Length: 370
Ligand code: NAD
Image (cartoon, rainbow, N blue to C red):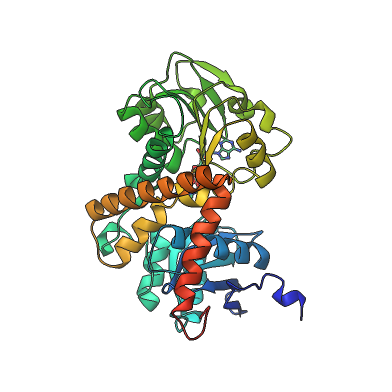
């Protein structure tokens, strides 16, 4: 019994729900972590190896991310066991079944995450009318197509540069994970004169110290090819992006890519975390001690969830861009200022800011977490 509450602390989780429907083989978990600020919003992740633990951790991350972004939403997450590449009719059946099972859980708003997309959200919307990240035809704002998260990363970088001693124009950028987040972040940075010198995907790293054509790389990726199929620059191993000296390093791929073991390889001045938990806490501390500024993930990559929240209230694409810009700039400034003034790691400052907002919201409620 105690084990069942191993993630319980003063912030949550409010509810952990296991869902099982043998007729269609549905196995899923919903964690509603904290709804003091409003109904929780968080993605539905579909993979074969998801777990209750992962769902609890991701739900808490959403509580902090939504609070840090100042959204009227708590944090929640759902995971669905299964191969997201299964036959589309089977996937539709599972997702519709999951939506029906959670029809009365009004404290949770579905969003897309790994293994799910806007089509999946359209099925949820059809069943229960409570999803964000919908197709454009249903009033959705296609956040990956417009680069909502990349737009936020660009603003986080601009604010962070006031705490560094170099300008954006001419800054050399390395993007690890040239996907939806990475390529759009680079597109916005390049408009202000930043130079892409290396980009990585699962195929490898492409590197040219004189600068790569990020638009050409994006076009290449859109045809399903790898960055290393680009006709300029040297083709290197995937992990070579860690060794390339640069001014701004943007992880936008997988969790835990920088650890205590390889952090010594990074030769950069500023890290903007596009991916979720790309750097372990110990490695972040080592970077801080070396004077490398790291803007933490749940501050820097909040553009996607802000876009979902704007969409959920019926807002438009241009409103989403404006809200992301305003929130990312204000929050990055607040976190970095607190970090400098109080001698904290940026992540510690971000945690204080977010947890403080959650506790303030909780203080207005009769029941604290639900
Ligand atoms: P994506 O699938 O569009 O792009 C990921 C890219 O990373 C791909 O090009 C892939 O080839 C590359 N990649 C995968 N493993 C790699 C590795 N080990 N080394 C180098 N490159 C690798 O995904 P995305 O939507 O851009 O998301 C990237 C990360 O950002 C994920 O961690 C995601 O959870 C996080 N994130 C995404 C959003 C969003 O709005 N899409 C919002 C917040 C956080």
